[in-house]
Length: 126
Image (cartoon, rainbow, N blue to C red):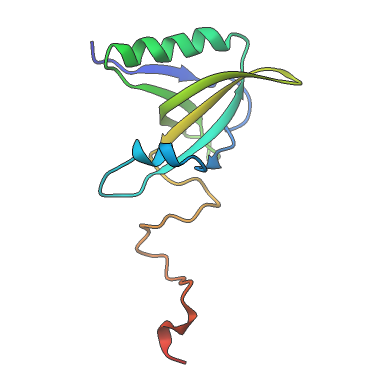
């Protein structure tokens, strides 16, 4: 069984992705390129069932992905690295730690060859 388990955002806005602040998450993202790893919160009616779907896929050696519509209105997927159910004032939420295929708008991609901005202002020698 190698089919990816998919959790789909059916309605609502594009998830808001927060950049990675968890050191353990970087260990799950090793490779030749630096992927965007981050977290998002999704409101849910049955977070335990969604969490069980992820756990079952992982136990079977399958991937779990979040399907959503990006800001451009196009479908996109993000690999779920970890998940947890929580409560907020508005109800139940699913915390998802993800690896996105591309960096969300507003975040700098460290591997972008067209990003000429530099933090080192002395690089020109002037």
